[in-house]
Length: 251
Image (cartoon, rainbow, N blue to C red; front, side, top):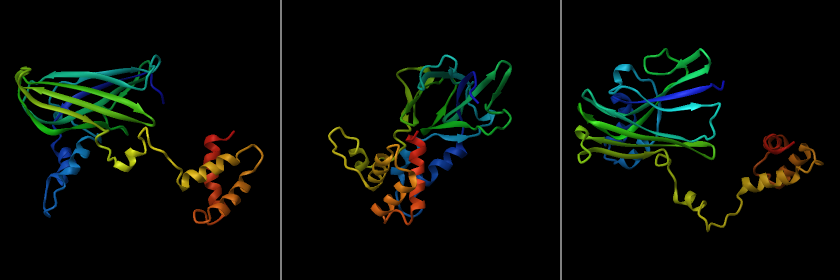
């Protein structure tokens, strides 16, 4: 289903139990092994969650409205800000949506709404923050579509009593930082890297070269077994690989 529009909402939340599930194993040191280097990956990854209304420490604010009849970009971003009115410990940000499928047909996955297959999104902060009335919380939240998935970013600043000179917390977070990237993997994307095909690349190249509108798939499969016997025990195994490429690139 493609709705007419989605309005995404955000609120700062007390999510002590969920935050503990994410971070406690990395903060603890029961066996004398320091696991804290892995912690930044965890707090830079959003999680599906279900929040209760009483976990919201601020009044929800609309982050962005997506009108799919006029939408021209898969990216979205916006800033939300709250004046804190009650004390509490904040562990991150909760984001949910109100959707309009068509005129008069709507549903929501907001905290307190009937439970659906859709959970809300929890964006943990780098550290919990004790909030007091008068504090101001500002979050710039963005979703940028890259290749096949979104990279999320959430930059947070908390001002004590709203005073811009008294910064209680200042976090810069992104799912980019939550993805372990090895030096070897990064080198493959460098501008001066000279690549060569691995076995999978050579297999796919051979298959695609044979798709000339003349050779049937079973013949390609037999040739593939002869060329790569260590990868395919019989032509039927090879045919599965060829069929996937045929569906994706053939006509």
